[in-house]
Image (tube, rainbow, N blue to C red; front, side):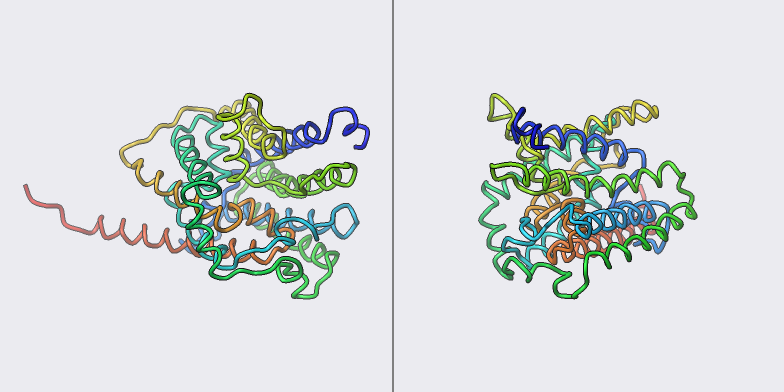
Length: 358
């Protein structure tokens, strides 16, 4: 690693690692159909189905591999932003609820929209752009004062206060063993619910890429004289930064985020082409565009308020047991299930209503 950094520089090495990890994530996410939104829809219908199984496999794999890396000394997350920096409990709750509601309306979370965009889904492309622009406005633009006000309602200091394992008093090795057991159960459940072995294995790879991102950036940081942020897979912030880089810079700045986004897109595209699943999909009459646009806005603002998206907070932050990440993930589930139940109730009422006479 030190030789690579000396030869190519920290930025180029981090970019290349992110590009490769992103391609693996994109291909595995496309093949496994990994999607938090689909899992919450099944749960809201009281169905423990195949999509829920895939999400449980990916999440268990992420926790198992990340905590295993910490237990074996290959990773130290005590100084990462999700734990060391000041956080917001109100932001995690409110942002998570908004994100969960938005992903139901938009029929996919931030990562799923990026993966679907690579397969030719024009609905996902438009919604993803709205999400990204809203996220940028929430981070540095006109919506940032509102985000800061909501986040400041219930702030929490960085350090042990944000470390859920420090509160519980469990060692990473113990968590890794528990997560390993959960992974075995989740794999069995996913297979029992009809998922193919290849899709279930791809879900394991999705979770493992979370650990790969953490370990890769940590290795670069340990061998560099420059300050390198230790991070892993997340989408709203990197998507916004990558888009602004394309718009404002003559050359795209080399970072983990700028390598991750195109990597995921390329990986999903290659998998879709190989499996024959790439095709153009447009907005249709039964899929109103305004629903997707509202969903994109809610996810863009919600993710910036919550400190990450369904992957960034839910899996990347959840795997290191950041308190705000787990609170955001729980809120995403609540927001998604509540929105789906409301949508089902409205659809049922519409179907039961008598047709007007002409």
